[in-house]
Length: 245
Image 1 (spheres, rainbow, N blue to C red):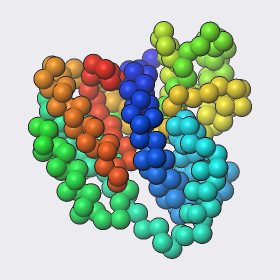
Image 2 (image 1 turned 45 degrees about the horizontal axis):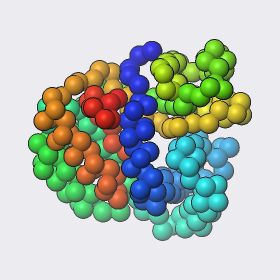
Image 3 (image 1 turned 180 degrees about the vertical axis):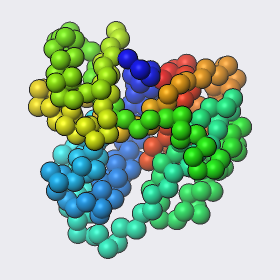
Image 4 (image 1 turned 30 degrees about the vertical axis):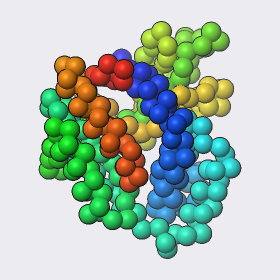
């Protein structure tokens, strides 16, 4: 398996999400709205919407909420003016960070993101300064249970078109090309598998392991970024205790 396991990170983020579920649903609803605006309300013909729905389901967003988000977006296309922004930079200790945002005020968002970097020993960089260190991949994580047969899951993932498969004591991680994500997700979902996480990610090619003092700064910065309403996703290449990727 190339890369590194996301399971401990997912557990860490799920715990936070439980306390902030309303905010998580709002952010996913925004992703759904932008997907509908760009490709229409039918997930069968809109791969971006299918991916957003997969992410919503893995975050336990109720089907009614998903349907309402799609219908609302379809009825308000003219009012949806979110701009997609990507920020790149370095956290403390040279940790590479990519921030994806959807915003209706780019100046506000840029200022908020810059503040999170500056306050925690990081710095924003130019476009492309760290993106080359990451690969865009579909990442599916399934929690290991007594009922999960690893060999069956491995074969099902490979047959569905997965690029890579890994397993540890707690979870299975399936990597796909972005264009194959929906097909692999759909095949495994039809097979009865439940996902702890399912989304398109920026996967680091290599990771760094900051010391304890630097880790604290990096975690504080990541928390500040993820708490921003306009920020949809934050990717990094740090191995952090308690949130090890």
